[in-house]
Image (tube, rainbow, N blue to C red):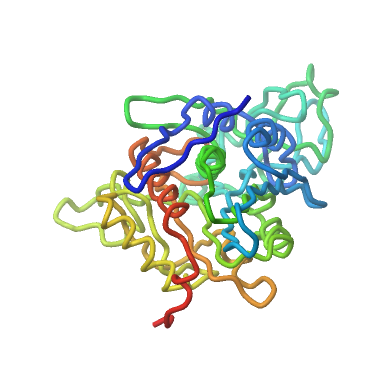
Length: 363
């Protein structure tokens, strides 16, 4: 028998599920191949929701029904997929040409260990050694076409063209810091799974665990069309560019967001101008409940909100992200306290969200 958690007016009822996050991060879920993550999500969410289905693209759509008809339909979304690679050509002797799946910087690839194929065959990305490179080659990022994934002749028959590969990084925690290959966006997935344990009260709560976000927000568009929500909150990870600048006298004004400053509320990004009414709602919740928050600086990048807000007749949407250093690399670094504050803010949404939020002017 499962238990439901009811939220009080002042609340911190849930602690972030670090063990679950570890399981999710160590799972393989490159865009288009989210099966392993999907199985974990279904197992974890089913006991706490009234409906749980998988759509044609592979999104997990879970619903907690309100206690009354005509309730406000509130959507929460987080993507299950991660960046990675696909084998595209067999060069023999265990060497494979590959293409990145999602945005990955080629400078970070040489000598990185990988897990390849459904059997997680160990491999490594190989390139020309420094002894054989010219000075001009060292100044430029390598071309992906010049690199190969090497699984060794002994494992050559265990993988094939079309197989996926992911970084072999294992999740670990060090004090308040979290390190993992796919914190973007397994942090969001774990957060939604914890949120699903909460009693929704007067809301119809819609959880979308989406696919193929890293290659074009594809799952989110389909999920939002199915749900037809009244408003949407997208939970993701956003890059924290908060490292010191080379010039010690210079202030870093291009930081995007910072570790330790709380959830990052989006004003705008490359794909979305967030609904100002939802921004005000989040800021009020955070301020009144002494939850630290920051604004994610407008600029490039995007989240599933870019697809959700354009669905149907339009969906008021906003993104809330947990900051993390070294995005789309073999290892990301996030902070437990930022994650906890994000979960606390989301739980307050379940208490306070109502139709009055959207009944005011947008300006």
